[in-house]
Length: 137
Image (cartoon, rainbow, N blue to C red):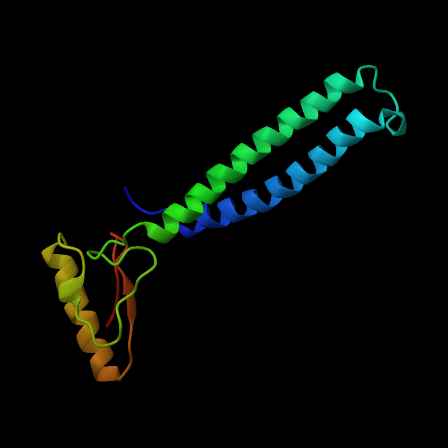
């Protein structure tokens, strides 16, 4: 199983923050309904409304737990050594021999041609393979 990508980690952080504020807000409203329901108008059954607020807060806690699970898995998940993965890139001294296996002969010729042109122009060209590996030419 691959580690979550940057978008998943960002969504998990956002969800954890918004769920935390939801838990706090719903607990405050639930407590107000239990203790001092006269301050909230239009509620016929404050005890039922309070229990529903606490139930919704429990659902937000579930979202927080799932978000923290995604963040923890992102921290402990092993990164793929072959292909570099979405977070890793090759340094300037590395070669194309570390790119994922399975490139066609025409792709290899294209990479060699670009490498020769970049070397003759004295510049470095960054390439991304179709399998997600990155390399510097």
